Image 1 (spheres, rainbow, N blue to C red):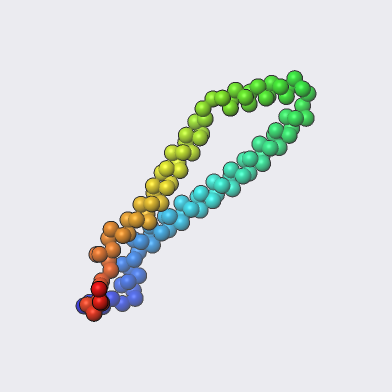
Image 2 (tube, rainbow, N blue to C red):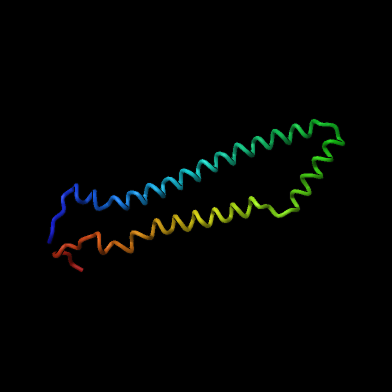
Length: 114
């Protein structure tokens, strides 16, 4: 049985640490997108409140534009769905991929009972 020291163990785990870092970066990116979405929602709320303060004919025109935009399928929503699929798939692969190489990276002790 070959014994590994601490430094060799750390060096052997370097690729997995990179994968974990990538997964953490994806998580952080998702959190930043969430914050950006919240800020955008508050800005739209302020803009909507400003529209309500306008004269009635200007407000009706803005409401008609909003109604037309609501009826059209959103390209942004399809992009969001595609982004979710890519992020979930990438996260799944990052979590599952190390399991395929575990036999090459982990030594089973000879005195281990099975």
